[in-house]
Length: 131
Image 1 (cartoon, rainbow, N blue to C red):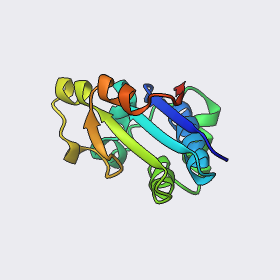
Image 2: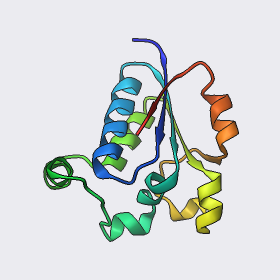
Image 3: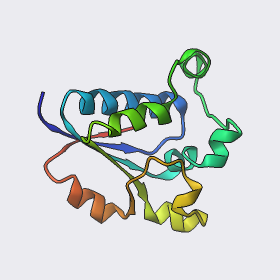
């Protein structure tokens, strides 16, 4: 499978984060180039503190089941997908600045902290999905 997929994660909701991570991970494992941009509440969900305190937002039963029964965390899934060499993950610089965050405050999956213009340039010609 070939192709290019850009995923924009905006929601901190477990269901949407999981959907974006699953689609991105599968695409990378099947050989597609994948770029993920985490912004807004999605970026905040990747703070080390949020994961340690298990500050998860769910909309319903699916999110609760994902948290209870998933054998692999969203972060672990993304780490494994990055090992393919086909996935890059970026944190939104605007949200980082506004929230007073540093890259060290986030889990260790991010390749870089970039702005929207940089991400759009990186993702030129990619199919874009938004979660």
